[in-house]
Structure formats: C-alpha cells, structure tokens
Length: 139
Image (tube, rainbow, N blue to C red; front, side, top):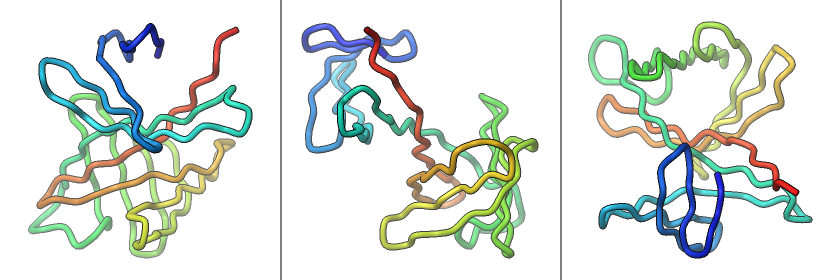
C-alpha cells in the first residue's frame, strides 16, 4: 500500500482515494468501494480491513457462521463450529466469539498469532469477511 497525492496503490491496483471517518473510499473506473481502517496512537501502524467473500459449503441455507465457508479463488476457508471453535484454511485452529452488535467475530488462535477481530456480513450463502492486515509506515 502506498499513497501519492489523491491516489493510492493497493496490491498493485491504483485508486483515487478519500478518507471518511475510519473508512478509505477507493474509487476506480467510477466504482467506489469502502475499506475500514484503524490507526494506532502515533500513526506508525494501521490495520486495513480487506474484504473477502466466502461461499457456504453445505446443505441448505446457512444459519449464522456455523459451517464451512470457502473462497475458491484464493484457496482460503473458514470453518466455524457450534462449540466455539474455528479453523482457518485447514491449518490454523482456535476459538471464536461473536459480537452481534458490531457484526464482528474475534479469532483467538491456538498458534502463535495475535487475536484478530474481523467484521462480517452474510447474504444468502455468501459470507463477506473484513480481515485486518497490518500496515507499517515506511521511513
């Protein structure tokens, strides 16, 4: 991620951008997408929340997060169980808690990863996850 004037480059794609509260408004080809971000106190680090869509892999309509969700393009997945366990990408297990008021879940990894708060929405059989990615200011 890099900024230059009123443009930014993210993952090799150039956007016009504006800031509204804790949201980056990224515009390309007349279409604007919103990306949540949080800065730390001194401005040296920022978490951006990149959106990824996952499709429910199961019978019928999903009932909340429970079940397996797959993003075939990136070969990523989440599986959430009724007993509060999750598995990310088939390799990273842990516990999760839901915050319905903020449409978020907290991932508490068993491995040596920091806990992560993700924002989410479900529409039909599609789960959209806003996952935090830490950016560090270059000197």
